[in-house]
Amino acid sequence: MWARRSDAVILRTRDHGESDRLVTFFAGVQGKLTGIAKGARRSKRRFVHTLEPLSLVHLTYVERAPSSLVRIDASELRNPFTALRQDLTRLGYASLGAELVLELAPEREANPALFALLAQYLERLEAGGDPENLALLFQARILSLSGFGPNLQRCARCGEEPTGPGEWYFSTSRGALLCPAHRSGSGISPLSPGTILILRQGQRLPLEKLWCLRFHRQSRVECRTLLLGLIRHHIEKDLKSLLVLQQIGAL
Ligand SMILES: [Zn+2]
Image 1: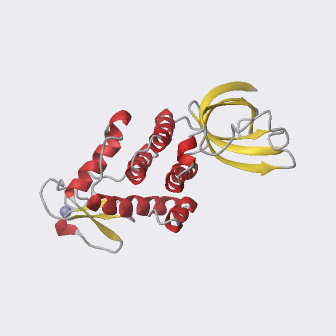
Image 2: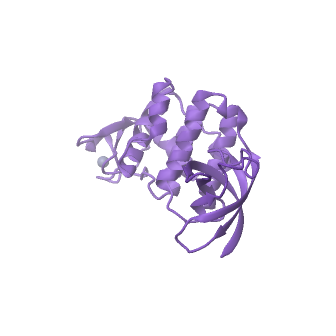
Image 3: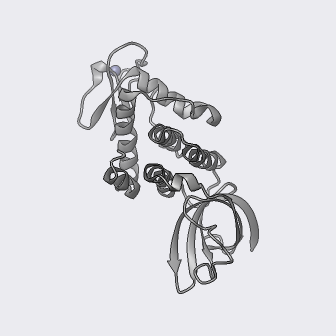
């Protein structure tokens, strides 16, 4: 048994038995893990409001067998993100971030860059940044951190780079950029050179500079189609938080 302490973001919680809760979290030191919080349903005092989805906490947990649930012994609240919970749109976009980490991050694989991305995304949403702009940057980055980032360097058919004017295209199913001369096949969506440039910056800029990137109106439409199409292609199901965002008219 190993005792660990780590900052973590709570991703999802479920009731377990009469008195326990199962908690899936993303920890700075170990990535995505699921643990059991004994007595968390019965004794509110022990984990007072510290195991709510989206909260940033400092967890003490014990690893038992390598593949089994960890045992959560204590949780200290670092940031409850109270302001974003009071705004349905922000809450919806924050939930989208947590759901994407749940779907894309493998179990027990340390990814400090992804932890920092998620924590900063929630902090920016809390601080009042433009939620859709933040969400597009988050999606571009989490795809590349998970190994699913689109190759936006050159046309997959002829190798030309997207430097000149003209409309380029992206094929979600092939994960391929296509120049104006080689656009063909179904399921392709347009991508202007300006959008390609900002997405490339979104994949490689240092995290603290990532959040300064701004998508203009046309880029937003193009990126939304491309990023959500790619995510759908990789996880092969609909995201619940997207349906909520659509229902409240935020998408
Ligand atoms: Zn080409």
